[in-house]
Amino acid sequence: MLVFGTRPEAIKMAPLYYALKNCPDEFETLVCVTAQHRQMLDQVLQVFGITPDIDLNLMKAGQDLFDVTASVLTGMRDVLKEYKPAALLVHGDTTTTLASAMAGFYGGVPVGHVEAGLRTHDLHAPFPEELNRQVASKVTRWHFAPTAFSKQNLLNERVPEAHIEVTGNTVIDALLWVLDRIDTDEERKAALTQFLGARLPFDWQNRRFILITGHRRENFGNGFLQICEGLKELAYRYPAMHFVYPVHLNPNVQEPVNRLLAGLPNIHLVEPLDYEPFVFLLKHAHIVLTDSGGIQEEAPSLGKPVLVMRDVTERPEAVQAGTVRLVGADRDRIVSNVAELLDNPDSYKSMARAHNPYGDGKACERIINVLRNI
Ligand code: UD1
Ligand code: UDP
Image (tube, rainbow, N blue to C red):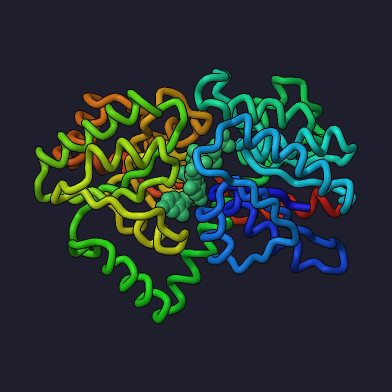
């Protein structure tokens, strides 16, 4: 049984779902969604054509960590009792991940953790995701680590080596699948172009633009004020540059972003995009400014310089390679780092290199090979 609840988990579990479904003689595969996200989860389910077998439908507007943790835990208790899966696969670092993994542990169902072993070692950054990952690791039987670095983190915590498999990140499987679908289907490409054209009032295929996303809890409040002030300053300094910002549905993000940035002529606030148009847009972007985990993994493989609006990251591989830079949720650092990339072609060139530290598109195959032998 795969369980997931939010947009990034769904994107990263979708290829694994298909890989398992393609082996019907070996696995009976069930999908349980908690729907910690509702609309943003459904967007992904639709793109990948997944109909969940079980839907806990638990999102409430303005939910807090207590709400989600409690309802996933009790919801999964009942699901596990009813379906008795041989293994429960959880993903990453959300509250769905934490509470589902705990439910597996309490219910005696062995847990496989996809995207295991990422660490900042700071329980407050990202909050609460670092705690979620550490707790999930404690109750996991099969650790699917995306990189050698994440495997080493687990070894440092005395996880037995035999319980860890380095697989690559399934996000690269998802990304390559979507890119291939776009590249091999002219009609699909035309529909995506039209879809984006209807939302962006500039020639986004031929003009340079900066793609922005942000949603981290530790940035709520002052962090988002700094981010918005930085964007405002950049939009003023570079009037010919466009800034495209699909705004996360969390009310703590919607409020400051709409209050501070709506109506500026070269800042384009749009609804969260379906995965396919988002990837298409990412492919055309000049620079990416984000605090997202998944985008830190996808953008390097498309050769896009990424400025990460956080002080620490659990994904250091691309930072070490020089294509991702941490700039904090700090107005001045955001402005100076974007300005450097826009004004200095050598700086830009040194960050705009395609590389794939996070995977080769075969992560699901490797995960399945482990599950075959359990
Ligand atoms: C969650 C995860 C975070 C992950 C992020 C991905 C936790 C604690 N946080 O953060 O790790 O990186 O998702 O995007 O697990 N909302 C909607 N519709 C949606 C989604 C959200 O209206 O489709 C609004 C609701 O008001 C909801 C609120 O956003 O109550 C917060 O959602 P929640 O999942 O609790 O937190 P995120 O900030 O989305
Ligand atoms: N994404 C998307 N539409 C958007 C913004 C992001 O499909 O409008 C995708 C993005 O490509 C990545 C994932 O959502 O795969 C990242 O999700 P998010 O930033 O919400 O969560 P995180 O990765 O930080 O946990």
